[in-house]
Length: 366
Image (tube, rainbow, N blue to C red; front, side):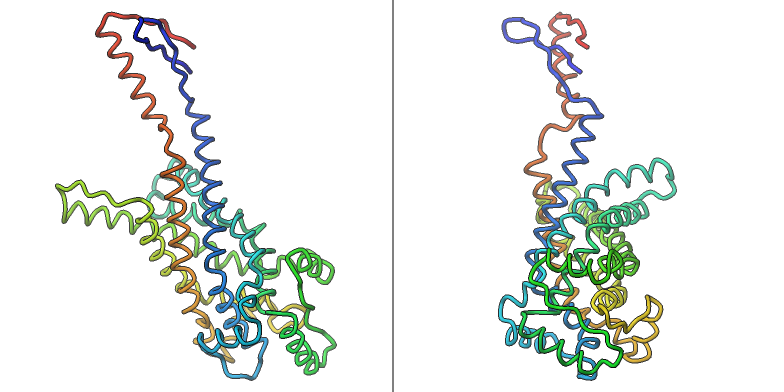
């Protein structure tokens, strides 16, 4: 669409304005891009902590019969056995999965939220945020889950020498003839090995438990984030009603995103423990499905078993969520700062109003 304007010499110059449709499409795709960059950035930065969390949650299964290690003990063990490389095992599939999840998560939040509010006005507000977050994370799970399976198995393995010693001990204790999976040299080797050994089912091991963890987590995180933003704005208006204090959106994303991620991570830790154990077990089946995992963890380890790794999980998610939301807000503010469609229309209307006051008339340009 174009509206006319006039130059200094009185020449009529059409101004081309983006249509609502093209602007909305650009907005959605931009959110997908920003979300992918932010998701990969957050995962890459915090991967070592995620490795510690995975090791702690799976140690009752890998090192059966041994007392569980604390966070510091596990850090020392990884460093002594594998060095710095041990903390970054599985980082490639981890970042790949986070790129997909970040893209769909942030890309779908706004569009799904508006769709829910339009179709079901009674589900507006926080419910709309919860549903939008869950939908976005579900779409990303088709790429994220295989990457998560590969990532967690590589995290548990560590270096080749340390994994070989674990495999020898495990296979010596097994009577069923099943053997632990071999060492994975990288993401493609891991994917091909799991496919050959277990097929598509192996790559999607623990898929439903992943959704059972991530859909509530994603919904809770965006709900907490939006609720915290509303709360801080309300408190600002209550305590500082006449000030023009403006908090940078990146700083707001950093602080509120971290809090939202921490709250959500703790509440969904039991679901994360079940998912991790189902995905790590491989050929030696210890848990026959979700409900069997719940029953056996409760009988053997008690309530504490469901919260193993909760501290490193929170330690991971607070900065990871903070960095992710900060990156998204930064990208929105600095690279998505083109004139909004409403602002463009306001400029055009202002131009037309001025021209009418001077007596100029313009034919409409389609």
